[in-house]
Amino acid sequence: MVKIHIVFALALVLSAVTGVSAQEVHAYPGSSCQASGSAQDLYYSGVTVANRGNGTQSAVCPIVRANVTDGWTVIQVYVRDRHSSQNITCVAQARHQNGTAAWSQTRSTVGEGEQTLFFPAPGGAVPNFGPYVIVCSIPPMEEINQPSYISSYVVEEL
Image (tube, rainbow, N blue to C red; front, side, top):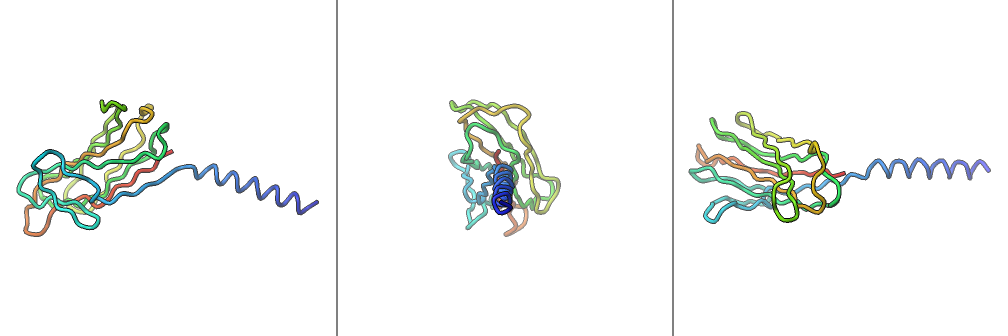
């Protein structure tokens, strides 16, 4: 009889732990971001996308939603800003299925260095089945072979 109670208690604990870990986390390489516009010139490596040009460039980073009826808990964009006076600026967006904006939030780096831009969960509900996207503006390269870049981005969903 004691064995049955232990097995039952263990089953309850395991089911409770499983329920708590219902969040899904997806990591994407920065190289999955694409140049925005028709004539932009970004440079791709195995995992990063960098701006080695003389002007500011934009990159669009798609997000595949694992749970299309709940929002995210956090989006994090990992970047390296190497420009002395311009920042990397990213906008996280939730859109309706028809592409119109439902929610957006903007974050920018502060000075040079490796940084993480955090986008907490939206205050309200995001549209069911609508896409998420991150759009980042990357400053030009100031010093030879020292571009600013997007390393990766992570999405944690409910």
